[in-house]
Image 1 (cartoon, rainbow, N blue to C red):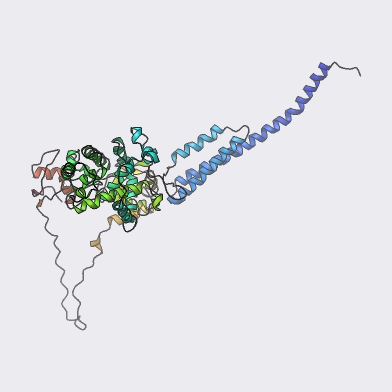
Image 2: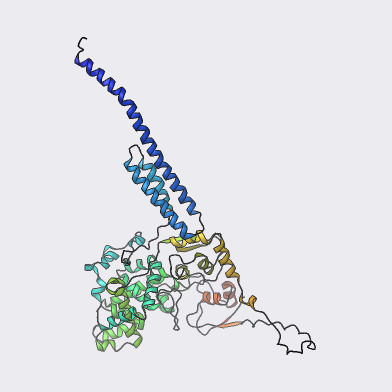
Length: 504
């Protein structure tokens, strides 16, 4: 056999090898395609399970099923990244699309159950100076509040009270505050005031209950008196709603008020708090008469009433615990407080929503959160379809499952329609034994007359026309017309007698 030149042999060898490797490459390609097809089938099945879960009636089962489905999708994406020929971008697009459709509840905490009280992610859109942001306020070197107050036995006694018989109030205050934090904290941060101070004032004043009121006429989460509120833009907004009840507006007014006090009182938090509680005139007079000495100086301290002497250390104690929960064994309640909006698909009241929402994710249910976030509405007032309510992602999630259809909605509507009077049965006097045959037939009972409706109302301290209209079920326009009150102030004063026109 004649010898072939080496180039010819090499070319022939390459041709033979190519012919042999082609089936191998094709087989490998088919295996890869089959593997990718299996991954795609897993992704499609997980997506279907997710969408089926979103239509479930039971919110706990739905949350569990969607979490499992998302975990399966993540596993598919991870496997796709290791599989030659699999498009991670395609798989990831499905996973991310459904992840965005899933409510992100922000109640996760560290393993020991203590979460940082500041959630900066809720406040990203707020323009706040760097020196006043939450991170600097809570850092070891930036705790200006800690440096500005005296940690003394009076404050320690306040801490003891908050941690013993007042611990439930402290926990309620924190939970209520977390729902309103995104509304209230920006004002304090923009004025360079510690957020802990806001929490301390709110905890002592109202426990975070927006509709709290005092006998003296102070109302709202931060308890503004009518005159002081008007100085800082609070009061009747023209519709009958008193903005002292509004968390955002009241926090802004409190920040302005405290900034004004601290400028007068040499940046003393204690004296500013004394002015907040006991009157700014008294605080300024004491400050000037004593040469600007500390609130804890005996000559200064003893010039304030007992209520103020208690108020100042209790506010500071609550603020201190807000900053140092772990040091005192505090485990703050888990709160899913990420803001969202619920648009009513059918008429409902806050009471009805509270019943159908249930209390999944909240020990006490959601009435307080709904009232705090929507202070304009009375809880029993039926709101029309299309009303937009401030809520959270969890409340919005529960609303869709429980308040738009199904047995829970039917139950809530039935309970709201129930009337105690319909349960009463009226019977005549008992008939003695043996006298039944001769006893005359019982006469029908005379109809019970409803008590006469009052025709006038005497204005009390702290009253607003809108509040009176809500309390007595009046049309505010008719009530104003009957008393010749002009928009938008509807000015009334204590002791004034109103004619109740347009009241039902």
